[in-house]
Image (tube, rainbow, N blue to C red; front, side, top):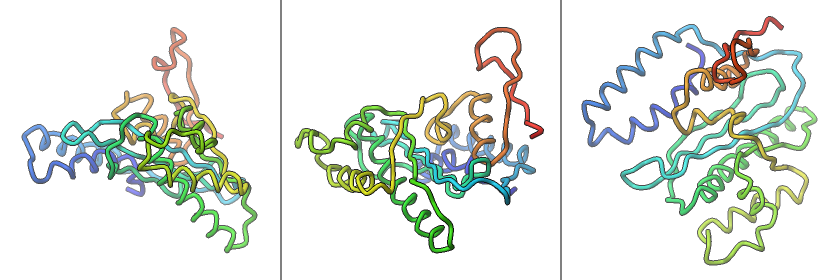
Length: 231
């Protein structure tokens, strides 16, 4: 099995249950092992002639750990337009966010630093890298990042320094932050459980495989089948 990013969230959550595991956690672990066995042939695809890009997708789930109120962060970084992600991460947040926006900002802060690192590595290898684009599905977080000085000092004060770091990269022309609808957020299944169709669609995109919609009855995309593209 050459890919493991689809296991990240489940493993991250189960790791927090080690000290106080229950029968429910054991059942979740058994389901995870069954899933691994079922997807043993899954792979990641990298194409030699792909166009070089630098894109990242960042997402967070606010207050998803009931025991301490912390959230889950996830991001993925792509360097080609039709290949697999070169870096994927999903982890429990270290700080307790006070709002969904703060949770998203924490995820973005983790992501943009890795984007800069990947950009520097590729440039050292001789590639001409365009401006990196970081996508998030939280418009409030984008507004605060682009205007960090208007943020109330008493609100989100423990992450204010992070805001200035991201804003500096935007002003330098190294990075841009854009909005991505939640339904199109590739790393969404790495922060929360999703339906089989949606999670499969995003996982296949992360692994570099292309899926097309085969329309059936109705206009709801959730009721459509996803089939591998022959292109």
